[in-house]
Length: 222
Image (cartoon, rainbow, N blue to C red; front, side, top):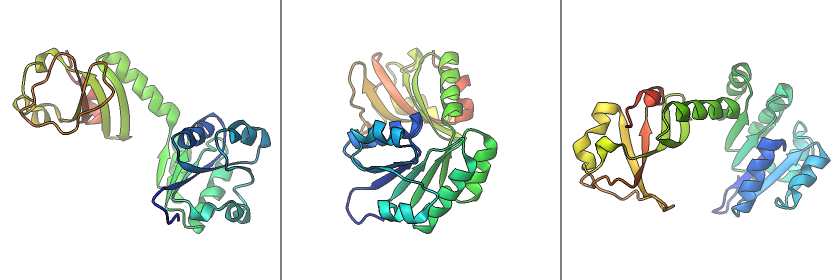
């Protein structure tokens, strides 16, 4: 594990999903090792990811040579190759990587990866489909991020019934199971998280809320 104040990330599998993660981390100034057996995929990210390596993550010695044992977080992005994902995760665990995130493309693969020790398993296609469905059903939801099967964070346009009311007066937690955790003014990027209960919701406000994922579609946000 890295001893510096900056986390070291490893991305194994440089298809569209893995490459996007590796390049995003690198562009943000993060320290990332990107690994794939396909040299063409490695070359595709090498311009943005200096530590891009052509190697086989199923071989623990190659992972050691790449410095993977120093990583804090590993992302295993080989969802269509279950055996490769399993061997890679087992190697990462043996090397002591602190947090392992794996991609799955089915519930069956998710179950297997969780059973062998992945700390977090994501299914991007399912999660994106859920986001699109919820936004179609409730257009006032401008963005949504599902944290777990029963918990989500989203940004919504302030509902008309909430405007000109103090947050504490609306009793949102008791009535709707909703917690307001941030407020953003229209056309501003900064989110205010230091508001108080007597803050009055304005017509141009966007609210960042945490809510029960199973109840989102039924929320009355008009």
